[in-house]
Length: 498
Image (cartoon, rainbow, N blue to C red):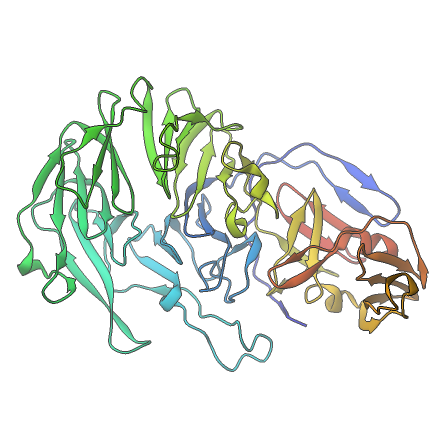
């Protein structure tokens, strides 16, 4: 069983809705909650994963996790956000394709995913999927803001208004050093991005300049002494955003300009966006431009996909005060009432909303789920595997809470089924205080109570390399009290629930 007990209190999510429901005699209930005090302050996404910072200084992450970019110490994909342990006082997060970064109030930077958190050997409970914990990048000091980048290197903006390119330099296949190159020629930096090997920097006066950071002769980034002159790119610019080589500039007159780092052409107005007014923020996804208007609506333009593509309003996004992008086709938004919302293709549940959020497909939004906290018989419990919320129901894998609940589990086989050419099916049984239910993994699956088949409709989704089981249904049939607050993510199981 892959579970750990911990006394640490996990950060709770956002949004409280007045609900008071009691179902059956097992004690499943959702209570009214006070207005949330913890709200999102920053969000970012990579290729299928997302990360968010909250007003209490905590960090949650979710989604595709092959390289440990969720930060939960595993390489198991997580369909519900998890709290990243060991981080505090975080004011901003950022993400690359398979990496995550966090900035704390003291100007320190933390990193996890990919080579930052390599595989760990010797873990008996997770021998092949254990990853390291987030590490501090001690070479970076007095950082004010992490600049978005999809390149191998990235930029930090310091509290004194200067900017520095930083990147890992490998000594062998595992060990690396963090190299730094100060961006000469820039001061009072407001924003900065990397467009391939071009640093694109916006200062507080609205001027944008570029600086080539690549030494083609040595096939590496330039040192400070090798830097060339800054090339002016545009003026009167309010915001910049990047997706690979495509750089978008929001002009103070409301026009959106486009510049490609691989071309020698100057920035040009985006004709498909001309006519859109009151744009106050721009962000990007892969071949996506996201635009936040002053009226709190969000618009999306799928450039380079269909020649005739036009901007459209994203459904479900109103009253929005900030937007964030990702390295994939997912966007994030923070609402005026403190919700963190996501929309896009839902790749590996990088939206952090519901398993199967692929059906949203870029034109509607859903709220990012809070990180779940688990308490069994009064003790806090943490398990490695992913949980999931599907169609409003809570699912967990076999390797989660059952052992700590005192439920005896067993894997067996069914008798030959004459209706299916005498095929046998796996049977998973759950026994608790003299009651036994079993799940026959046929198609469709069948629920058995004390050996008798029921007509109960049963779904067994397969997520993150695990079969997921309906926790509420199992607890109901076994008579185990269950409390789940869907707004905060708090789950309590066993006799000691309040």
